[in-house]
Length: 111
Image (cartoon, rainbow, N blue to C red; front, side, top):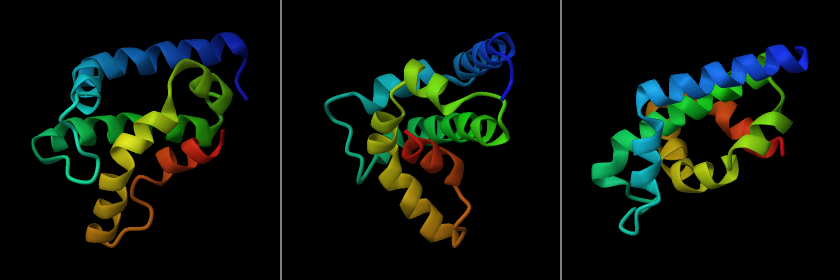
């Protein structure tokens, strides 16, 4: 595992990346009252953004650049998966690719 300072630096960079790809706006969409995890409809862009962000974070955890503990302390990964997981699993099946979204799913299960 990276030193605490290096790990914090990576996490800050990941948070900046999240701002660049619109994570805040995407979170607003999935936490809206009209959002349905089973059928995201007009919100599917937000779901994809959050899955991509979570997959990126999961990949950093898998590589040892940051700890799952740090990620789970900073964000509610389980809540993100509750909202976006149904789409991710359906997308995985549709694409016939078991590796699709595997790092975010592993991150959720790591807690």
